[in-house]
Length: 416
Image (cartoon, rainbow, N blue to C red):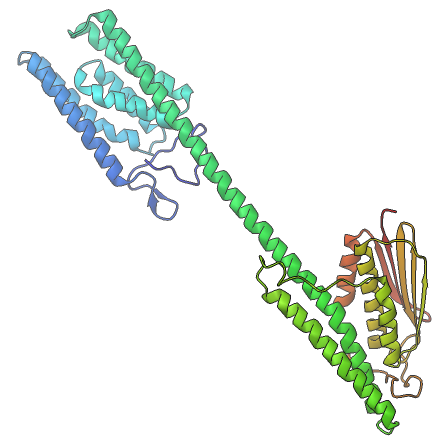
């Protein structure tokens, strides 16, 4: 017999089925051939037992009683595999125990009933059924002659029903253990799949955030330089060549960053070397951000204080804050002076980026200047990703418009 994978433990609820009862994707709970083989086997034993009893007795009313008991036992046998009513196997076992009190022709079916109930029901139900089977055969020995003395007969009867009860309960416990192990394995597989899926989503989200932070910064520099070229087409050829060189270098760097991201996305998850990301930036790389912004014509003031050792994760986050702040300043306040301050002290790194609001004039009068409105407004996802990054580190992010412009103020704590 098969146990459905979605049924509760056997000690809590009997698993009853017929060949027509189906669960778990149209699969029979008990295959029809199992029921047929069991019924035929019990029927053959019943016929042999009945023939032996009839052959010993003289023809008469007792013979017909044995035949009638055999027929009734075979008719009650399907109750052992029935699901309606719920306690049909228990009822069938009690009926067969009662029939066994009249004739040994019901003995094969009664012993199978004891085993079946012990197999599918808890001990509090199986023990009374086994006792009923024992009493039925004891009554049979009291009024019908047996091959053994009464004492030995009762001892053998007790031993057989105790063995049937123990065998059934052991079978039940083993089936319950196997079900529990299979269920635990399925749960572990689902949990592992869920963790893998979450890890993949987290990694892709991280890559998308890094790509946004890096490419948005570089493309905003390109847009600012291209806007300056558009604004001053009559500038000195040397300045035009220098601006064109900045655009070429920026495009090359952006393509390199894009190739790194695509390489990570295409790499085999088990290939550590092939999917290794590029080295993460540090606070020292903020100088490069400021230099690039100034080369693009931005009026950027940079101030850094403190020289304590900062954890790598905090350094990366501080760099991304400075990068996002400078990028947003070029996007939303082109031509405005920008002040960047990074203060690193024991237990905290504070990054502040402020601008003077949008300007509708070029910066500096040189090719590197930017024209107001030449850079398209962003989607707002930069600050959202930045806030998430800061929250993961237990920091605070304050961003909003002030009377004199826009201020991005981030505090990143760490254990000193």
